[in-house]
Image 1: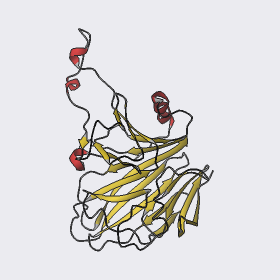
Image 2: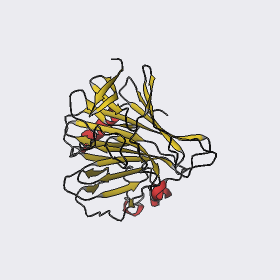
Image 3: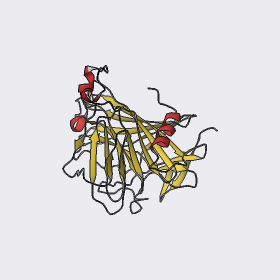
Image 4: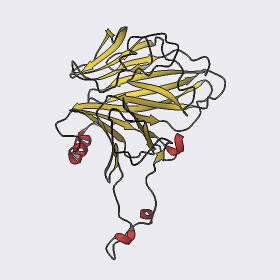
Length: 314
């Protein structure tokens, strides 16, 4: 089925780009952003969170979360909360998707764009571009946040478990690498690992979104490629790149998860590298959504589902 693109009203805004393929749709407003606010089945639930009180508003003098998926800058500081409450420019990419570009931020010197490419195999490439039109390097890097709807569970796959050499049967061969660490975990001041929402399992780490809870965040250097989020019978998968020799923000994180009583965010971070003068930085994610029949506790079915999905190629 071919990709369809239409300009439609959405959420109180007069104009939004609606992309549809194989019974699924993705919607991005054209009066704020750039950001994606809906992703899900046509006439079905939205896997992304929407702040109902902020829908349809434009020109606000304060930063608005709105919901959905957005491009920020790392590290977290006042630049992150620069306003994106005005309209974006829209460029159609026939048979591929579209590009949304926000207004240039005169105070900080950057301009943001999001390119959405929906492939026939169901995989969607989201290319985030942070542009620098100034004659000086900008000490920021792309940081991409997907705000997901309430009541789901996030999955973080882990590298294969390998016993400590002293726990192996006598005479078993092992590598000296088996003595070395292969994971890290970054904690924030408000992170409580005794929180019942987090489970650090052998094969999967899980983080549940629950109402009436406080903020919780973890970060890590993720090498296994994908992060999942299951909400009812919807399964959202996001592939996040990892550069082995790169330095990442927040004590080495290319991936972070945040949740509170309203949302759960899956966040990806580009390597910690300034945006060169009169140049740009690009950071890509790849998305997939599907309906599934297994419960969120069925680890083997989750891993089997992911294995069968198309894989991104850079």
